[in-house]
Image 1 (cartoon, rainbow, N blue to C red):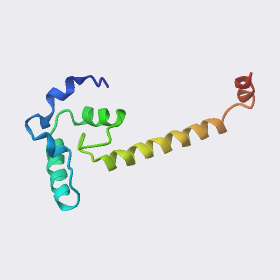
Image 2: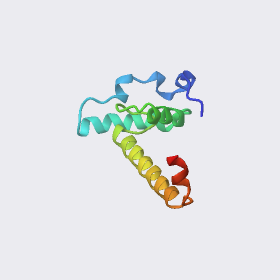
Image 3: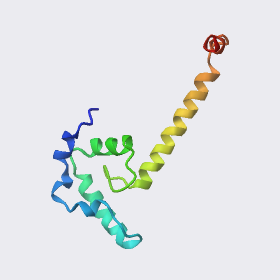
Image 4: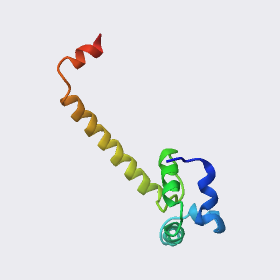
Length: 104
């Protein structure tokens, strides 16, 4: 997926107040703001591109692709755990001589 800046010009958020996507409060006030931002994201034609950009950056603030920073953090942790499991599985299935070859 090409994540050049072009996708931003098609965002549903362009006509919204940017502050809406970066809540500074907490509690019910923030939840109301987050919900409103996520509703805008839900109808966005470039939501996936926005989310991928936030995941690759990694963006730690604001609503991106309809997700909160906490949601993105959970996804990053899950992806990291999956990579570790896959790496361990690959090591367990290596040929016995593969580790000797790498050591050379």
